[in-house]
Amino acid sequence: MTPLTTSPATVVADTEPVIQAQGLTKRVATADGELTILDTVDLLVEPAATLAIIGASGSGKTTLLGLLAGLDTPSSGQVRLAGHELTAMDEEQRALVRAQLVGFVFQSFQLLDGMTALENVMLPIEMKQDKDAAERARRFLAKVGLDHREGHRPRQLSGGEQQRVAIARAFATEPALLFADEPTGNLDATTGSRVIDLLFELNEEFSTTLVLVTHDQRLADRCDSQVEIAAGRRVR
Image (cartoon, rainbow, N blue to C red; front, top):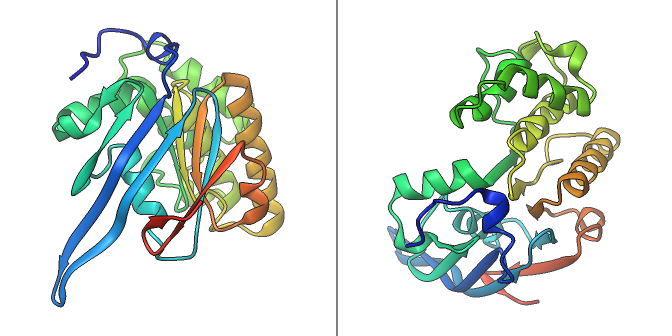
């Protein structure tokens, strides 16, 4: 296991791909026997690249995202994330890697209802023990056009505003990698388009490696490359 002794920026400056997956397989036990959700998937993602994982509902693309991000463990195969072999780590070690290197944007926003927009964005910054969390959070809320809504709680925000808060939170620690799972899935077409423009603008500004799951081919076409999953296998 590679020790986490360097900053994220230093870690991803290496010439090797920022994500390396080999033979990723995920099986789960069911009443009818073992079910293979993901079957021997390989992929490489270079630093600062944008990758779309596409496929039909139930194809295994969200499972793949979770394995690449260290949110789940494979039944077999390996994942290296910015030089760290996630599959050789326990959950505490994987959580440390995520805290140092990774941001997330989810379809369901995943904001904490009891916190304001500002407090939601501050949370991952404070977890990194940054004393300027409030100032930094305000700066990122301003980047997504919500500095005037910092005192509002999620239930007081529209779906598009909640996702913009989630994007501010994801970028506030300037992660080396950002994983997005159907980031426009709960938004109407117009709002979704604005949110995606914002996501790609910030991604370019901070040279983040972006991996997103989507069923929207128009969104996938904005990425540098695409991986298609069908019935748990990579087909392109």
